[in-house]
Image 1 (tube, rainbow, N blue to C red):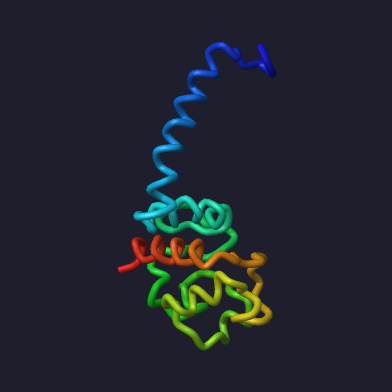
Image 2: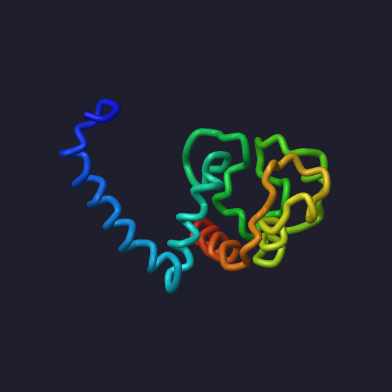
Length: 132
């Protein structure tokens, strides 16, 4: 026993889980940008939903593509976001995900940004799947 787990029975389960992840990651890294984006979105999911679910600290991102920034009814946006004159499209989402505070100075979003363009594009592709 190790920390309450039987290593002999837990090891096969862990190997199976790792094998499943090994099958998913190549597809996520290459030909399936929305799948890769879904995996990357797990970072965002601590603050944002992308569909039905409990309210979180950040606004729900379902339907964000094409939405005017700071306009989701019922969400208390920062004054900076309320006055931002932009619509969420591929270009603005890319700038936002690069460094939110550069696009909207004074934003309340506590996220430094994603430096890798491929990661940003994968998340944007995933956001498209949750937008009409």
